[in-house]
Amino acid sequence: MEADELLVLVAGGDQKAFEELYGLVSGPVFGLVRRVVRDPAQSEEVAQEVLLELWRSAARFDPGRGSALSWVLTLAHRRAVDRVRSARAAGEREQREARRAHHPAFDQVSEEVEAGLEREWVRRCLDRLTALQRQSVTLAYYDGYTYREVAERLSLPLGTVKTRMRDGLTQLRKCLGGVA
Image 1 (spheres, rainbow, N blue to C red):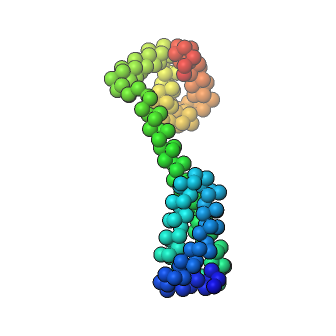
Image 2 (image 1 turned 90 degrees about the vertical axis):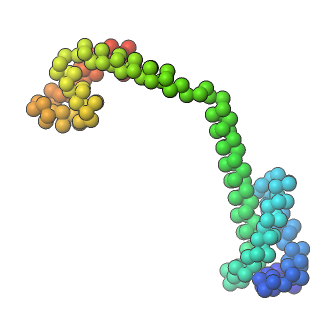
Image 3 (image 1 turned 90 degrees about the horizontal axis):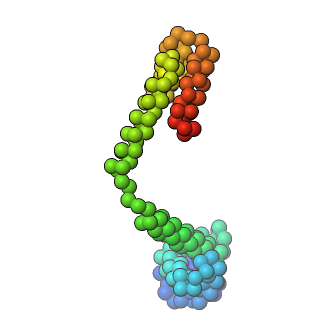
């Protein structure tokens, strides 16, 4: 009997037909899975999963869309690819966990102290700017205004604001040691 006929019988719950179908497709299924998964033990496991799925979902087979062997091998390929993706994702998770384990713990106190020192350093550098530069930089970088909005707010031409900003930022960069 052909695989197509056997699969239709399996869909009706025929165990004898499944045994015969198993004999026909188990070799090609394992071969395909083995080429995708590569690991022999995992390949056997995936092939068994495919054949179990074949028993459970035989009723979904549509002979009008292709042969039974093509349908079974499509199931096998999808399951094998899923296994490879799952293994890869698990490996990536393990690597991330290993990297996290090797990083020193986050020290919130030292981070807050460092951030406070940096804020103080920036404040001192801002104090060295002219009042007009400081006002422009503060509006743009602390209050979030665009250069055009800063110009409107200060009733100045856009070019003047851009010049103040450029000069102010140059001074800040020098004061902060090239960090800004």
